Length: 144
Ligand SMILES: C[S@@+](CC[C@H](N)C(=O)[O-])C[C@H]1O[C@@H](n2cnc3c(N)ncnc32)[C@H](O)[C@@H]1O
Image (tube, rainbow, N blue to C red):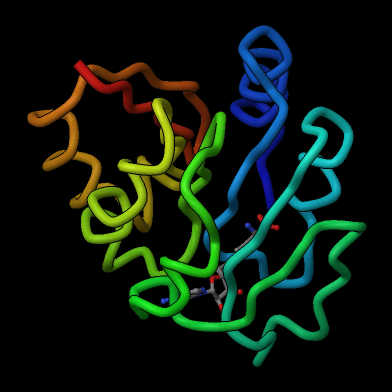
């Protein structure tokens, strides 16, 4: 699910910042959840049922099954994370960033050169940012 040219440098970056907790939006069968458990002490996921992606292996993460835009889900997930990784509905990347930025200082967005490119173009106008380059790309957004 991840292309390594951007993912490895991104993981290295994660290990250099406070990395107690991460919230992932969109987990499919759990590939990135495994990666987060190697770095973060507390891993939480919000994701829809597997569907075509197949069954989810949470790899020890706490999983909330639901739509990340549901107010009940937003409330249930708590308020404070070192990072939020946005990889859910790529047509709703801007919405998901705005909904979840109150819970963290850093948001990572996956697929910024492909599926989320339109949303990313909007987000870089609003926030300080950096990019881990690769075919798909991972972007970071920081609060000003
Ligand atoms: C690209 S996959 C995630 C891949 C995973 N992060 C990885 O790299 O291993 C997108 C996932 O987001 C989920 N998803 C899509 N829209 C969502 C929403 N509104 N709320 C929560 N999850 C959503 C899909 O069901 C799917 O599991």
